[in-house]
Length: 178
Image 1 (cartoon, one colour):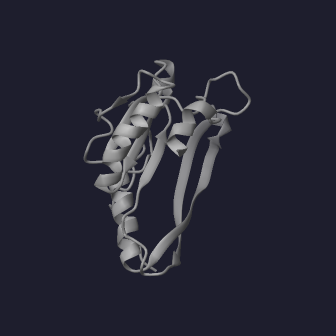
Image 2 (cartoon, rainbow, N blue to C red; image 1 turned 60 degrees about the horizontal axis):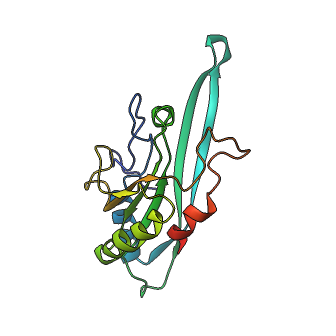
């Protein structure tokens, strides 16, 4: 029924850069979820439709990636808070894989939660990855998120010698879940 244009909810296509294409701008997503909550709507699921399509075999297999993220909401009890928290694992881009750069964790939410996590989560992550740093970089700034952990590899990358790329690394992912 309604469409909002020029909302800038993701990083966009990102042609030749080390920024991840179509990665959600978390501050915008949290603001959207907070607004829905004020009207008693809560998220149930976040699906992604689309995929990778070979558009022209005769031209050397040009690949296009289509993504249509969808939020599934339900009418909820108005007593639920409108403070949302989002934590994402930001995987490597092709350029970062070539440079052997590890993943990032990106967080946005209530300031009290961010303050606790920048201390406790950082401490736990450093037990398995001493090189973990907290701070923004040129791609993930304070305008897009509230906290950024770099040098984190909580999943296997796309080129690891395993059957399932991006499969979770149990001991490294455990501190995030705790």
